Length: 151
Image (cartoon, rainbow, N blue to C red; front, side, top):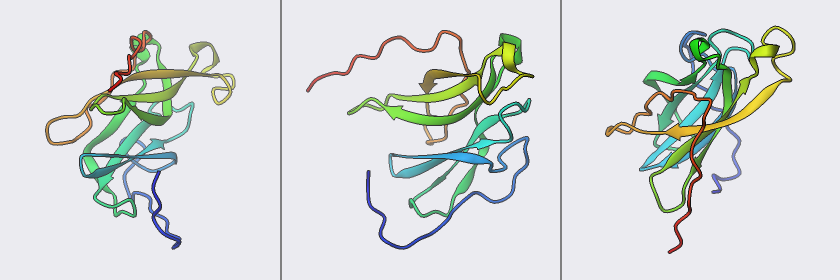
């Protein structure tokens, strides 16, 4: 946690469409290797293209530069994984290991209260050498237990 002063400000990414990065809600911000990563949900929980998009900034106050390929994670109907959104990011302290925690919608509730029947999921988040986020493939298996190394 860090303080960014007493001034008030609002930053959200501008533009985009529901197919790529149009801002909806659910912002999460983290810092890695000189960049602030801003992630947010696009569209509505029950929508077919509901997903997480991102942009970066050198300042926690923006401006946000939307990534060229902004989709971080999106549902996979072929695997019956729906409603991937509202996320947070976890880093294993002292490493460059990152994970995305998100929700998905149980397939039995897609047309009956998708906003109330959510499953919490976690998958690995990786980065390309240039710092861009590699799109996450949502899974049913999640990750193996993570061991925290004591120094």
